[in-house]
Image (cartoon, rainbow, N blue to C red; front, side, top):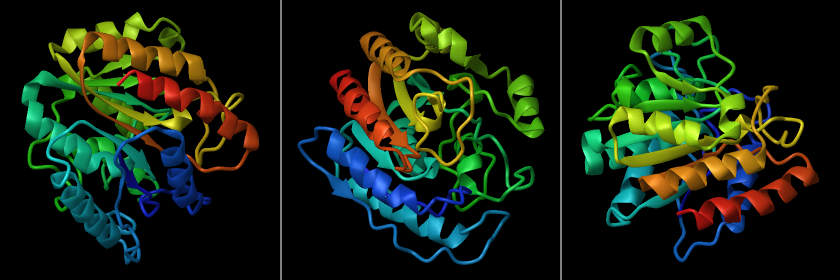
Length: 269
């Protein structure tokens, strides 16, 4: 397990909770080995259209170093904001190339560029950066191809994100369709990939059942539906890695949800 309690990429006004959220998530997931990345770099000024740019570059460098010490084994990454998944997905792409698809469970597309972002917060740009259209200092050497991406549960998109999805025919499984786990399995199969990396932003969950996130959006999935989708993916494809991000502890009831959800996800690996 790789624990990256990064908060500098979040635009949430309560982003400071991500540090504690990462620690609580890590404690709930069984792991024989845990590596925690030091992400204490001061935010620094905005640069290249990205808030806290210098801290994010430093955190990416530290995460890459930590991953290099794990000998290429599949890793569960615990965040922190969504930006913690830059280095793990970069490593999965280097290992698997075009055999890899990424499933992005999230309420948001995270597909803005520095030019289109309304906030400058990097957690809304991380997926676009993985696709090669981010700040040069954060773009991976081998970007993800749009036809190897599946959005899952996304329901809050900015205009520029909608345009990108339409222009590149990005596959998208809407939240209601995730009630049937085979829909996301079929979407990955359609990419031609045989290996999958799973990214989970916990705001993919409906806030009526889980609200400890910085940017909740109505119309999400249940914890059972999320767990079933991950199990279905792991049952069909080789799992290259998995990340769980954006937990901002605020309600005791949400911790109970995680106590049930996370062991089910870990058992799928």
